[in-house]
Length: 110
Length: 113
Image 1: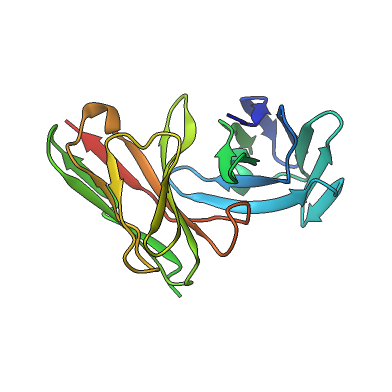
Image 2 (image 1 turned 60 degrees about the vertical axis):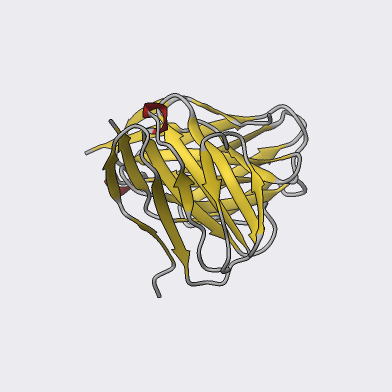
């Protein structure tokens, strides 16, 4: 099944630094979504980027999509302690079921 | 504006018992989903529903039963709970097509002894 693979699996940075995480996939997609999950909570949608888009912004978040390399990246600028969470990319598979990767655990150190 | 809620939030049960996890959404979203989240496996789709009375299997449906008699409710039943079903269960909904944004409930942590 189509599943995004996030990289790195874990990332620890200092508050104020930028955080970049990547998602790679194997087959063509209609769109790719990024979600955040705080510890003990449900997932929260961050950004949806369509296959004909190359970049989208939302506040301190920037998502890029390179369909030729079958990869996407999520950049969080000027990180804050509240950004500590797991981040997942999600892809459409076949009959349009959304398939989630295993996530990147981001820790922001004060 | 409650959004999407799950109950119970925590449940401990014994092997062989039947357990029902409840999911309720107030948006009248067409699609609803059940996922389980386990370390090492990420989030896996159990069942989903495109509308009332329309359900379909996801990646890991064995041992689970769903129903959707009303648009707003999507209960998940473990007919005879097993230890391997110990997990955190998330319900989600989306407005239109499955590829649209999904909105997640807070989760139910289920322990099967």
